[in-house]
Length: 123
View 1 (tube, rainbow, N blue to C red):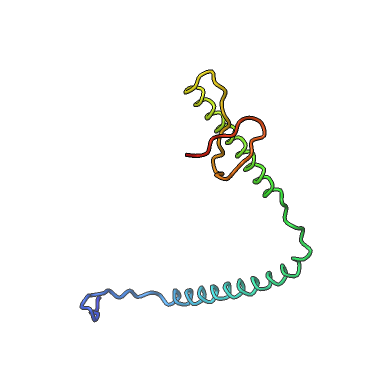
View 2 (cartoon, rainbow, N blue to C red):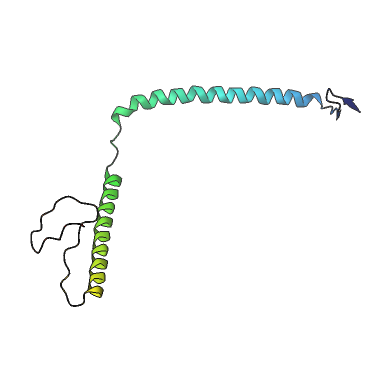
């Protein structure tokens, strides 16, 4: 029931009924029909949407604005927490003294102090 291949292995030959080959030809044909229809209608949809595009409502800026507002208030809360931690640390080291201004974290240029004393330069 088997036959020898060029590699020397014995393989068994499976005999399939002929209607399975007809079925596979039909399935292959059906697949290619589906693919051709899909490609054609994809092109057709692109043409239709290109014609409609100028009349579409513009996209909303609400999501972008809400992200910006959330980022702004996150920064405000973060700065308040950082300043509070700075004050508590200073009070632990120097009890009863007035807390000097906190030096800006990410700005090393000159800056003016409206009320209070200017900080000494960075050493």
